[in-house]
Image 1: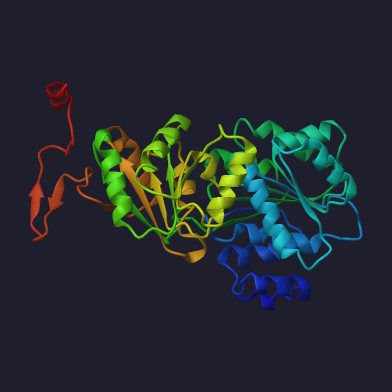
Image 2: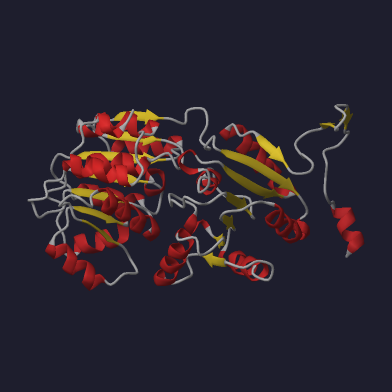
Length: 400
């Protein structure tokens, strides 16, 4: 279905055309009538499927620009997502009188307060800064028509849940609540239902949570060989942009120092950097001034980098859904992408669960440690008595 068939106001439709939005994505087409009808919604769709625009377009239409009050509230878990989301609203609402604004930790608090006093129709916020302003009486949610939780599964986890419950409790009047996410574990679904009133449920990832536009490659190797194999892979592949994920800050720092010895246009990012530094690096990456980005999971959720062709898991992702969110930085909006995950012996149990749970078709670079029977290039099957092991404790002792 085309956006031109929705009967959108001409000022919004013209801007969508300028942005190259013609055909609606499946999540946009399914959720648009639900949101415009004012119903609560819990929507799950793969990363890069257009969930932000699915929220933003009908949200802008709900705003009365003659009323100087916050009428739309969007809550996101990270500062980077906050800036990205408000940027998308700015683009789509550019030809309207609707004013969006973002508040988040790490930015000048007094500047945010001054803007809130002036004119804001749609507020995008991280939970901590929003609660700070609510406690201080710096803003009111009394005119909110629609509240959106983006990356809802993250916001409803321990650590965020109490904050979200408090924020929603501050909206005392009847309003619409929308939950959007790429993943939604069963325990989080129960909490999500408590936030909604007679909701519609939409899930476009019933059988598969990893985007089909991504090829999933795995490399089974000894930890000591990872650096050499990574450099070889980066040299052999035709890479537009790549994000290389590590599980800890110190690993990001170490890998950055190593990779910049072999490649140019390399940067790194993690939560230990200042907000201004993180913002600068993301802007450079978005503007394609950085080709290789080594990152912690601060870059692993929700962020839209349209030119990322490859994602590499230097460390096997921890947690049930991090693989989905990390690899979802590539292959966005129907584009093709590649994900490579380095696997060591200790990762095998988690790897089996990942492949089974997400219905991934793994492509192995080298040998597949999950198979006992291997087929060689001539099509003949070679049986193994024991699973392949790239290294063993006995072998390790001999080399020490």
